[in-house]
Length: 409
Image (cartoon, rainbow, N blue to C red):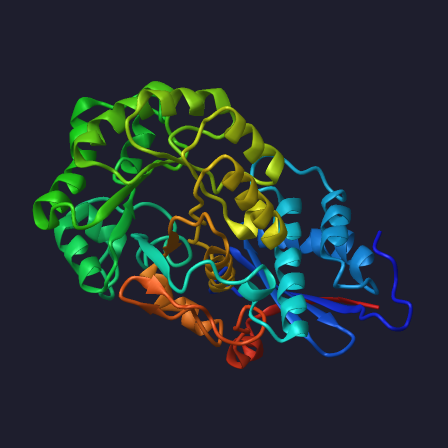
């Protein structure tokens, strides 16, 4: 347990959590010190469960502790629950959100941007790719859209999930016009339910390949295309899909099989010609170490708000570097995680590319935080200001629908 303040050190005075019914899968966390500084964190999925863990298990350890003891605090609160390989575990998501808030608080205390506190810039700008999630994905309309879905009509220019299923070539042209040179799609997900991912019919393989064909016909090789597979397929089906996509030169295959068998992932990698990326669904350095040692991945992906926060993301990135592997942090969660991801990606020497969702940036992200990363011609600029450079908007905090829970001394 972190040693209590001796009168000269700062102390953690209060922890707040926020859940908003309009964004029901996201949990926001703020950590206050006794000098009036506030750090901001975030995680997602099952926010009520994570919130309960934070206030009943973690808060008693943290209130009154020195917030600057980042490594010691991470170790102590990580011991409070059983951390699993799956990043959806409530404990590791709570650890992630609290660690993010503590790093933001620490950087604000120094008056420097987070990327500077992490070790400074490794690049002056950061290449982005657009995940084609659209407004319909996740927060506003859970589920997967299919071509011919008569109940759905795009309500803005960035309904990119609908677009990659219906007019992928035009979508690629739109992304190129904004400076994006890479995109990610998941056209095979719509066929998983037919066999629970245990097989895929040749006709469905052809239908899943069609968006790749349209993109290459429209823009050639001017844009890279990543295939998201969402851990939904068994090994033979994943290999079958990957080989069908090979003629279109995919940027990578992401999470092709469930992440509960590293040998299967390694076998997939040996069977395909293009890079394998994994995995936003894995947490902590110990599980990434196993993937690296088994030579199961080419590109390391994690989500900061699920992997164990900035502390663990930095450790995983550095470990990946020792294997000469690049990183590509995940972002399809919320605006706070996105800001943290940009800071870390700007800092780490082995960053390959950073994910973003332009539909989110243009809509609900704006309703929550005061600032977002500036993206110009497909590249993110270093955020300005101390810490992560953004805060929860006053209008968001004043919303009567917002559910707030607090722990203090």
